[in-house]
Image (cartoon, rainbow, N blue to C red; front, side, top):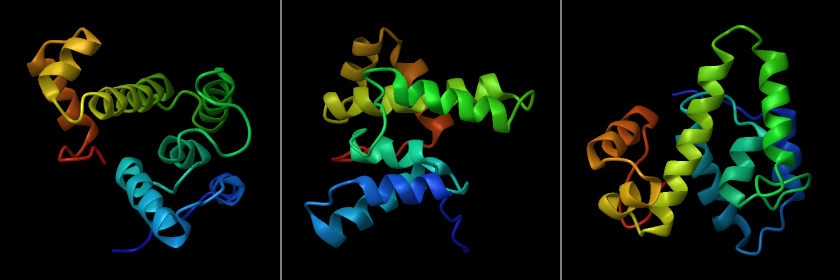
Length: 136
C-alpha cells in the first residue's frame, strides 16, 4: 500500500518536536498519526495530536492550534463538507483523549463525555479508533 505522504507543515511540526525517545518515539508517533489520518497525507494537526501539541505554534489548550487548523481546512476545502470534516476531526480527538484518560474503559469514557455507551461505541467505530491497552 502506498504511503499517504506528509504535508510541508507536518514535516515542520515533526522537525520542531524534541524527540526524547529518538527514532522509536518518532516511528510510534508516525504510526499513530497514520491511523488517524485514514489514508490522507499527514497534516501538522495529525502530528500535534500524537505529540501532545508540543511542536511549535499554538496548542489546542490555547485555541491557537485549533483555530489555525480550522482556518486552513476552511480555506482548502471551502464548501466541501468542511463543517462535517472539522467536527469529525475534533470528535475523534475528544473521544481518543477520553479513552486515554480512562485507560481505554469505554463505559467510563462514555460517562466522562456524557454519552450513552452505545453512542460512544458507534462513534469509536465511525472514527476508526482502535482500543486496546493503549488507544491508538
